[in-house]
Length: 230
Picture 1 (cartoon, rainbow, N blue to C red):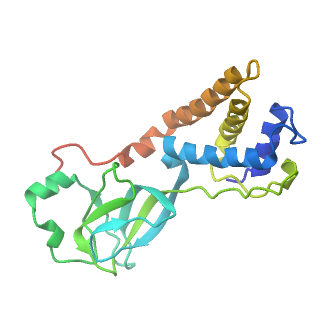
Picture 2: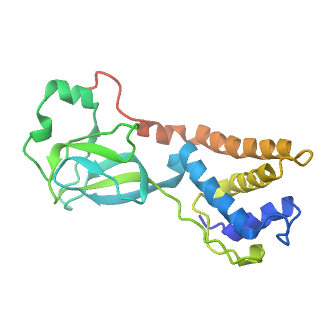
Picture 3: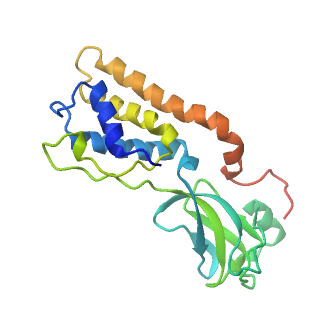
């Protein structure tokens, strides 16, 4: 993630033939860039995957920190160097049927299973219930940091910071900025088509990259196959 936001805005402005920020202000293009990163998060949360260690709270139900949009995986226990046992995902309905009172089971520092429902992407459950000493190494989809809007009446040279997406997707982000700019001027001849074309390039880049990495993200979709053992 070493691509600068300035380079994305510059390439967009060049395509729009507006390097002087006459038709579209630089701040406007930066807002589109931030919107594009958030939209990419919806399509491809794995693009924003970050490994981190979570300290849990008492009980079975856990909530991700405010900086995380979605849980992608739970790797292992991390409370001590001598306890690095893996944590397996399990279907909550399966655990409910086999251990109906698992929510009030005796708490433990080490988790054995975790349960996750993509309908509620910022929460997950652990079994046995956790203590305040429980720590887990997890992978989460992190919200991208917003690029600061520059002062009014400035050009792309005033934009600072790096994009929050992998460098390989910088062109896709540029296409998103261009698409949004053309959407604003969609009443101009041809601009609606240009907006659509650049948005298609944006989504195609995300889906094309997904085909090459699907093996690494398929396990984040939710619970295991029905009937899996706990």
